[in-house]
Amino acid sequence: MYWLFFIKYYLMNTLKQKAIALGLCADFQKSWSNDLVGMYKAGITWCISRKFPTLSDMLPYDNLLADNDIYNSRLVNLLLTSDIYILNNCTGEVEIDDFNVSRVYTSLDSIIEVNVKDNSILYIDAYDNSVLRINVDENAACTVFAYGNSVVQVLKGNVKIIQK
Image (tube, rainbow, N blue to C red; front, side):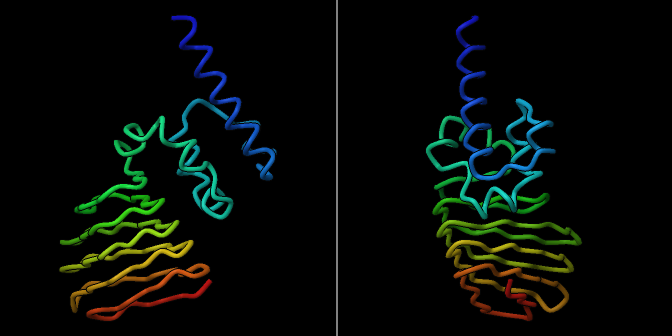
């Protein structure tokens, strides 16, 4: 059992050293914990802009990440009830309906069809060559923060696009 602790400690320390090399701020260095999911979500903008952690860093934790609404290199078909993270060449569809409000982060060549229905509100941060195809119902709202070479195709409805 001791060896499992050592492996986890080694992996966490390796990730921390990679993050420090990429410019991880002192506050995050001090608060570094074993809560990979919480740290990733709290620092998502920093992580995406530095492409950290890499897909190979994340693969050992893929099931844990998916259980926490972080998807890597997979087909997604999701009805949104919370914020989600779609990364690393994902493809698929997301839908939000009723009076729900949510945020989606996409990056690294993900291609996603987005359906915003009823009276829902959706915010999307699109990074790194993400492609979004968006349908918005008349009473729904969608705002996209488009970074870099992301592509936003509005198929139906009004979408507010803010180039960053």
